[in-house]
Length: 269
Image (cartoon, rainbow, N blue to C red; front, side, top):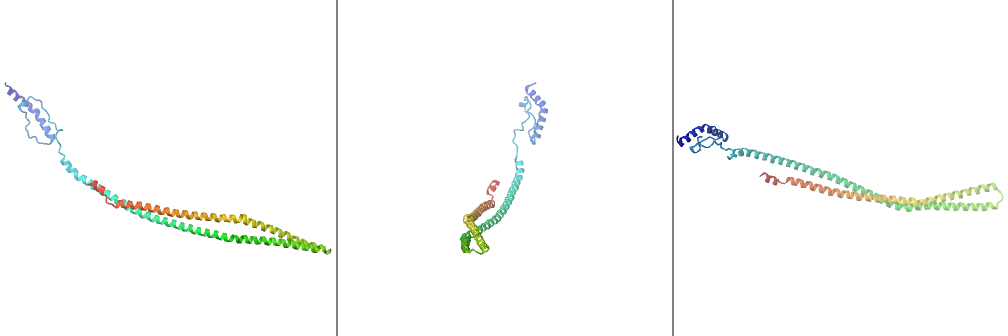
């Protein structure tokens, strides 16, 4: 048998082996086998080889076409949610601005009321201080008058006693009457002396203790009233500045939310 005849016989024997392999390749690639699954005479002596599918390019156009509408719809929903959230934040920012303005105005009015009250208290304290300083000389003069009266009463009582003693020293009669009159005048001198001592003590107490103490109290009230006014003025200025800062921040936040979201649109495009 010739060599050509042997090669044809080998090709016929290898046909049942190559046929299942061609069918397997057709099922995996989902393509119709157009070429006949028969070996050429030159390939009859070679072993059967299964074609590689992994190396072939995969057509993704169908998948891309299916995913594109879903991705666009998701982006649209995300953009709508972002716009809704931004509108909600803008509404809240506007309400917060209005509320801060109302509360700030009320607190500012309260600070002004306290300042007016502190100023009225300071004015009353100053008037009380002026009245005290005007009244002080009159009180001292009144106590001085009481002291002078007591001094004069003591002198008169002593003079009357000396006169009565001189009168009754010459008279040798009416001993009982003499003793009664002299005893009465001696009592007057004693009472006048005690009254003078009390008047002198009260006068000294008024000048050295009572008046300085009352003056210090008025001065302290005046200093406290002035401090209250300064504190009220500082509180008012601080409240006004704080309110302006807070309202400026909230107005800026509202303005930022009112601006179009250019960055978001750019990212969405």
